[in-house]
Length: 259
Image (tube, rainbow, N blue to C red; front, side, top):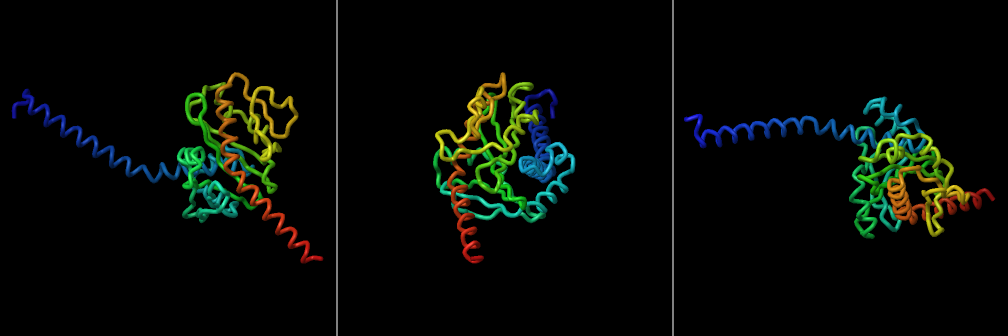
C-alpha cells in the first residue's frame, strides 16, 4: 500500500483510533470498581464527620476498607423516604454490601419538582444521630454536604460540606474551615418558621437558634448553600415530624406500662 496515499492515511488513523479506544475502555473497566469504592468511602467519611464520629481527614486516611467497617459498626439503620416522610425502602448496611445514595442531583430535581419519585436517604446511627444530605448550586458549581440531627429531630449535632469548584480562600471555606462547620453544632432547624435556617450576612445578630453568619467575601456560595439547606431541610420536614410523633407515642406507651 502506498503510505503516501489518502487511503493509507484513513486506514492507519482508523486503526489507531480503534486501538486507543479499546485500551481506554479496558482501563475504564479495570478501574471502575476502585472508583466506585473511592466515592463510597468518601461519602461515608463525610457522613461520619457530620455525625461527629471522627475528623474528615482522619477518616479518609484510614483507607476505604476501614471506613466501610467503621460505618457498618456505627450505623443502626438506613433507608429512603418520599416527600411525605413515608419510608420507601431499606438501604443495605452490611459491610460487604453498603448502599448509599451519593448522586444527589437527581433527588434535588425531584424535590424541586415535588416528584413522587423522590427517594431521600436517611442514615440513623447507633449514637441516636440522624444524618441527611443536602445539595445545591454554589457560585461555580454544585455544593453539597451532610447535616446530622440529634434525637429531637431539630437540633444539629454537626455538619460537613463540600463543593466542586468554589473559589479557594472564599467559597471553598465551606469545606476547608473547621470553624465554619463547628458553627452548626447546637443550632436548630426551625421547621415551623418562615425560614427553616438562616445562613446570611450578620444573621447571628438576631440571636436566633437557626442563624449562622455567612462567610465573608463568599456571598454567592453562602447564598447557594443557604438555599440548599432550606430546600433539603424542608423536604425532610414530614419525616422528622413523623419520627418525633412516633417517639412521643413510644414514650407515652412506656410510661403507661410503668404506671
